[in-house]
Image (cartoon, rainbow, N blue to C red; front, side):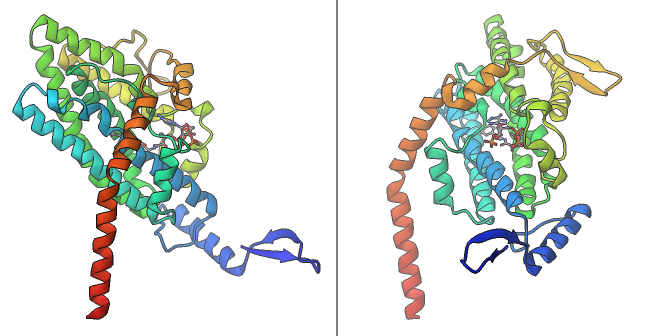
Length: 330
Ligand code: BYC
């Protein structure tokens, strides 16, 4: 964007350069064709900013999201369960890494994204500020949290930004395994002793509403949705995706022999949407403001892990410098 100046070199107003105009026309065409924008393509600054915000917050969610389940690795009830849980938590780390790499293609380096998380400037998904109190919570997290993530993320495989859409394809495949393993934990508990069944029901009761809130505020309170949908980043609104998810889990819960803590779930023939009971949005905004049950603990653990990993970063940088020096000599 060129800036027109008067004789006193005072900035008057921005005038789009010929390059910007051609870039905008190309961008509009790509979006209209439902095709893909790639990192080297021209893109509006607001598109870049929106993607950087959403993708980096998604990456942060994957990394912070490792904590509630990682706490249970040492307490898994069998070797098999331990191996599965460890693999799942490692997958989440991988998702964070693909997403940080994809975000970096938009121009913000990883250490800046990390600082935004550490300083509390960047958000991460509200769901990870709730505690995981029992082994059954590993089931509820897999079934409901990863289930909600899939419902939200499958449409993101078609996001207009190439690196985001491609990262989502692999992530969604892995999330399907995560959801399956969570469902299976709950199924086994639900068919166990009365105490085990109660533990499974209690976990579902606690995770149901927070999982529904993962889809974000209602459409009327979602400032970003409209523009993100116009840019083909989001394909469905927050309420549409939440409704689909409710439709999905109200069927699956029957197989578990459990119930959802919501007696207002019904299919609306007129709108074609699944309806659910009122969610506590005050609680949602409290969690976003950093005042959820585990916000402080999650951030403290993240900062600790970052500090403890300093030697790894130093060693990697030293190794890269040594390799570069060798290549130069050669
Ligand atoms: N939590 O205008 P809106 C996983 C924020 S991890 C916190 O609707 P948008 C897993 C929103 O950011 C997968 N903040 O926004 C990992 C915005 O604030 P800013 C996590 C939320 O972006 C480990 C404001 O509220 N999934 O699966 O159009 C173990 C207004 O909202 C939340 C993703 O990250 C929330 N729930 O839509 C197990 C999916 N909701 O940024 C599992 C990718 C809203 O303007 N992200 N906010 O300050 C998205 O699809 C969208 O960003 C959202 C929100 C649907 C979340």
